[in-house]
Length: 499
Image (cartoon, rainbow, N blue to C red; front, top):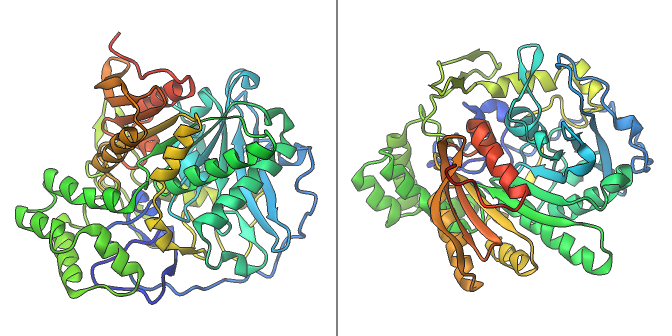
């Protein structure tokens, strides 16, 4: 995950995504742009692994028996089935996307199919989504422990490492990693789903939802739009809704809301807030950074912002203490804050990286490393067109709503990277443009006996919700509340009111 720093610029709009291992804390690895991370240039360097696998051109047979996971090393006993493997999406370049699929805990045949995507661009839905957020297991030492708030309690969960170059996904021809864009990613994701249905034909006409967070605010609407277009020719995707967590939807609105968040949470002074909203706002700085031409005024403003916010606070969750992690992944854990008896493992990054790089784990997952030496949370070799962040996807969200597809935008309210204020503004503006009436006025919703957050619904089809106390990755930092949100979303029901 690459984040602009106040003192550097790039020579190209296409920049290699940073390695997860080189970042301080788990959250800094999974999403978009943080102000005080190192912005040094990372040259595009393909580490060629000449032990290429024999490429299997029969990846897409209707049988999935070869993808069935017998047992993951160290996992507790479970009654549901797991699968993982590859789907070839471009035979010319031998591009293969890796997936991990867990069926629902109970009665999977009656439950919907949910595709989960993480963002970055270039971060793993396997390592972040499945093994750190809402999958059935969490790595702990040499074993896996059960996640009591796993989303496969409510759905059959499909995690996709996309685009190629992320995690175990690969292209034998390394030019497949060059100049990857939103358009290429959406097209490959569509091909993946079509061919994945060949492996799992029983899910072909199942209710389908797409969920994810951060830069998936681009991936998901763009994929959903292609699915709607495809359905006009051949009815294949039974798309019932999309949910976007702390998503990038409109560059300027989303990014510029961070100044107010920093200021209102005491991270910056009055005087810095003033120049951060007038002399150089954050969207201007990021735009200049990716064009390799940071102005002196923006450089000065961002140095001041970084000095005050401090590297010892996690911008993805300002309530958490940071995890000091060495490059060698030897962690020194600062005791995390505890709430309601639950503690958050702020060094979970290292647990996941270590687990997924074990040979027995890779074998159990049917995974292989191609052109990289190890699995990483965020890609070292992917060369993504990062200026695509400026493409507004809120307009695509509008077209999906017009097509009759329900959309939920939800925000962890402790995230300063894509703050709730920007997302709420964008949803409210879209509702006005679509002339949708407010069907549920702004109110609290409950998870158990506690306030889970706030919500507002327009036209019974476009919804906004906050998750109280959650950060950029809501299912990680507030798992119980996020599961309540997810269940209501799948049932297309309003979030719970006080009992």
